[in-house]
Amino acid sequence: MLSSPFGVDLSRNGQAGDKVLQGTRFEALDGMRGYAVLAVVLMHARWTPGGGYGVTVFFVLSGFLIAYLLLNEQERYGKINISDFYKRRVVRLVPALYFMFAVVAIWSILLAPEPFGIASAWGMIYGIFYFSNWAAAFPDLFPFGWLGTLAHTWTLAVEAQFYILFPLIFLS
Image (tube, rainbow, N blue to C red; front, side):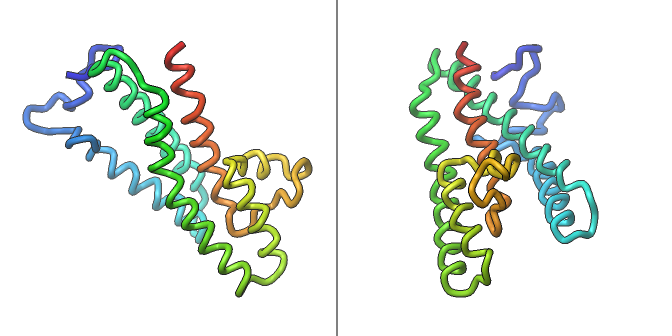
């Protein structure tokens, strides 16, 4: 049984036979993910404000799940292997991000009107190093702080920085 610091069994929600955790996936969180995606999509379509709440939900879920993974590893093995944690995060995030960069690069070279091509090039540089959030927050300090078609990568940068810092804080 994996329990929280408050003695709550995290593998069940307290009702007999009603599993919250299925394998390594919390099925109960899928609905929250769905609403978060919907909030972000509707905001980008300019149908409703509030997409920021969806992003916040993603950040909260990510924090919960990373804490869960680290607690689970600590409980199962008596320690946390930080290098394995970082390798798993890289394998999970980088391939999709780089595929998206390839698609945006091709689009920028072949079809994008200026200034999208230049903004996308800078956006890729910031994105590769997971620095997009800082470029978006302080555009006067960064060359071409506007990220163009890659503006959404600021959330990935925040998440990557969280992945880097949280295990270190968790272990201290």
